[in-house]
Length: 229
Figure 1 (cartoon, rainbow, N blue to C red):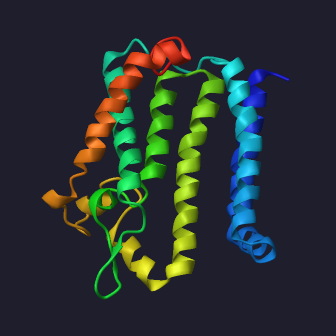
Figure 2 (figure 1 turned 90 degrees about the vertical axis):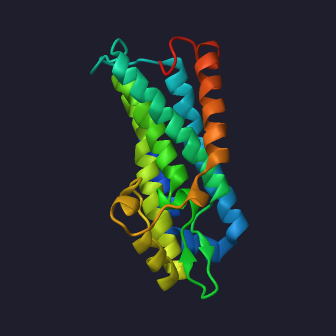
Figure 3 (figure 1 turned 135 degrees about the vertical axis):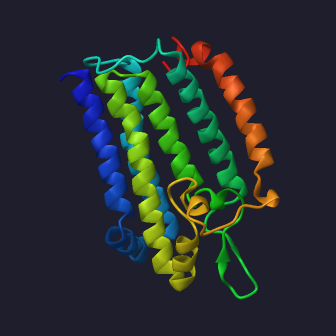
């Protein structure tokens, strides 16, 4: 079978298994039957069993399939890609500093703070930006399928987390959702939340800059080829 087909097959299996096992019906039944920790173990095994072969297949067949676009010679696009990667790394680091779903006020209401005012799912948005950045620089069909999996996972993961939190926290999380946005900056632009100087994620920005510089310097050494290529 063609390498592009194998990449597509493993990507489909990874996303499908993620959807099925983390769906509310299957997740709740498994937890009721075997417990929370065994469920997490099964989830991890299934994820590794599909993601591992996907990465292996892609690593052996980089740039497989027809070339759909070529933007590597376009300097503005390359700068856009690096800005996307910087944003992705800042959001990813910030997701550990301000984990979802926010802090509880004295009244028990969940209030967004820090990076959550930009997006309530910084880690999922980071995965999405990572995938989009690499898709722009890798227009081969196999690469587009592989890196396209990251935005798909980010969107699906965010939707699933919202649904689960709504079931667990009810009205508290519903109010939190009404104040925030999945799409970066949408809540700020819409006036649903106000940015303050104390919300600036300086530590995440610093770490993101350092990580981006390190990736630029080491990408060719670790992965070969041009950065993001």
